[in-house]
Length: 273
Image (tube, rainbow, N blue to C red; front, side, top):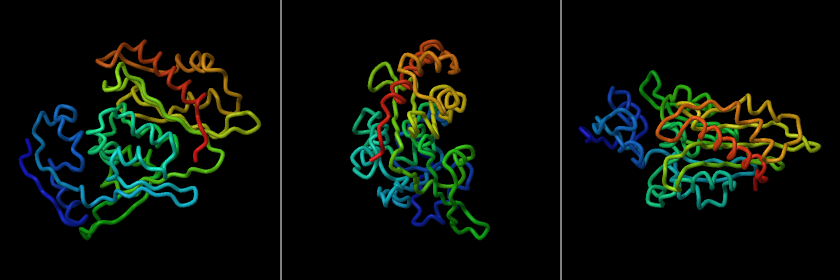
C-alpha cells in the first residue's frame, strides 16, 4: 500500500521529495505497483507522482530521434518518428492496457533483466538527459550515455536521444514461452555493412544477468567479418551466453533461445528510416 502520496508541481519539488529515504517515483505505475518485484512487499512508502513533470514528446530532427521519459509504450509503438526496431520493442509488451500506462522512464528506472526497451537503446548508443538536485536545491540538467546512467541511475530520466543515420541496420527481439509471459531473453543489435563486412557492431542482451548489458564478446565474434548464416551465428554465439536456471527456464534453454533471437536480429536487421 502507499503510505504517502505526493504530487509535486515542479522538478525542484520532485527531486526534493525523492531525496527523502523510502520515496519512489510514480509515473505509469506498472512496475511500482508490483511490490514483490522491487522489494517493497506491497508497501510502497512515499510515492512521488512525476507523471506530469517529465516530457512525453517524441520527435525526430534530421538523424536525431528524441523520446521523452514520460512517453508510453503505446505512444512509442504508434510513432512514425521512431525506427521499426524500437516500435517492435514497445510492442513486445503484449497487453495494450499495460502499454497505455507503462513509460519509457519507468522501463529505464526498473532496469529489469529483460527490460523491453533497454537492449535496443543500448545498441543504438542512446544518450540520456536527466535532472539532478543541485547544491542549491534546484534541478540541474545533465546528459550522459544511457549505459553510464544505468550503472548509477542518478536523478530523474527526462529524454532519451539517439542517432539514426543512413546505412545503420538495427533489430530487436524477445523470446518468451507465450506472448504475455515474462521474457526469457531480449536482444538489440545495430551495425553497418562495409564491403560486405560488419562494422561498428553493438549487441545488447537481457536475461543473462541482473540487467540488460552490452555483449563485447559477441560483438568481437562478428566485427569486421561477413555475417554467417543464422545457423552459424547461433553456433558461435551460444557458448558465450552465460545463464542460470530460474523460473524463466533452464540455463541450457535460455542460452539456446538467446542464440536464436540474436541470429534472427543480426540476419533480419533493417535500415533505420
